[in-house]
Amino acid sequence: MASITLQGITKTFGDVTAVRQMELAIGDGEFFVLLGPSGAGKTTTLRLIAGIEGPDHGRVLMNGDDVTNVVSAPHGVRQHRVSAALAAAAHRPGRG
Image (tube, rainbow, N blue to C red; front, side):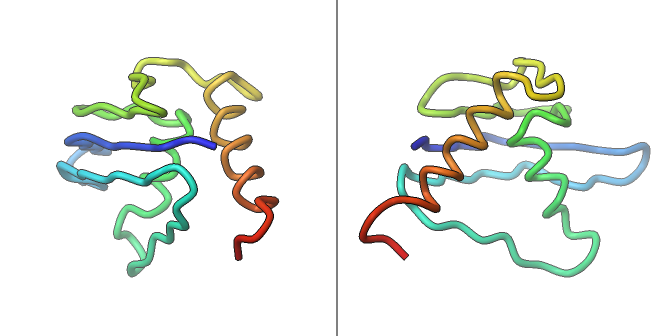
């Protein structure tokens, strides 16, 4: 699996700040849920982690490796790493 860390992540769309200075650490094997009202930045955060969107500021780390500037093309490396981590979590024996 993988640990995921967001360090000072900010993402804006024009005049709208979708995510502001987010700090987040999800440890290897941890269960994680994003909850919030519509427009709170949940989808944007997941898109930043997957590499579909790039942050305006901050860093995205996977297992301690900075993947902020790794471009995630369709079926790209970064999306594969996120998908593999999620699949491993879903099939981990004794968890759930």
